[in-house]
Length: 190
Image (cartoon, rainbow, N blue to C red):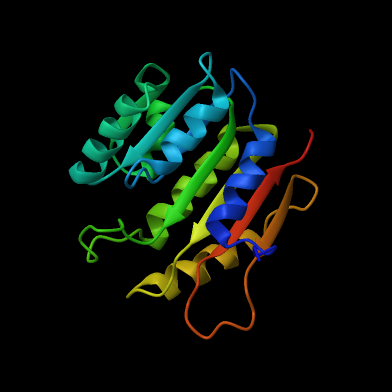
């Protein structure tokens, strides 16, 4: 029997797939091993563009390798820099932005996303979003510093004007470990 309730990562893809169309621009704010970059590149199509950020050389190399194998390199710009510098590279309206907060799977668990940098990236990303654009954050918080990032993010998001943004939080309430949860922010029509 298949599960009908998806985990945060699967649900993030379902939501983003409904948002993106051929020719759109999207951002993978945390490239990691390149899985989300390939997902976004597939959904923006041959005429779209994906900007993919990571601070770790290992992640940049893994992402470049993955997009090359999937024959999507021409539609992706891989950037070895933090997501807090997003607006230095992206200067056009964006349809979708995807974050996976925490640390690089299989990488150095001491290198994690930080509240101040994540909040700057979220603020800047919201400005880049076009109307009906979607920002999704999959928040992993079971590591040192993760709880602080989670709380800072939720504090910021609770204050967003509901006339400008619709914010959804999707999480499991009966799991005692720390499964990631999802935050989806849709920019409302102006």
